[in-house]
Amino acid sequence: MAKPSSSQQTTTKVLLITTTVLVLIGLVPCFGWLNYFADLLCLALLIVGIVGLVSDRDAEGKAQNLGLHITAIIASLVLATVASVRLILGCGVM
Image (cartoon, rainbow, N blue to C red):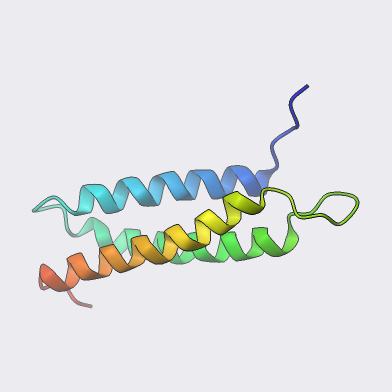
């Protein structure tokens, strides 16, 4: 029997997929403006990843979905860097 998915896990997965897609689309010329939103989503993904890493525990206190939350933290930092570099190269610095 499969374990039920927590809302923390679902939120992390949705933000991770959405942010990745926005950054990849934002690399295409004329769509660089999407990176402004992608940077904000990267910040949200970082916060959700850290909160999930700290609070997503089972009844015994063991961490659940540890890999997912660490992946979200690392991916948010990498994607934010890529989006920010694309904004700088496109002269869209805030």
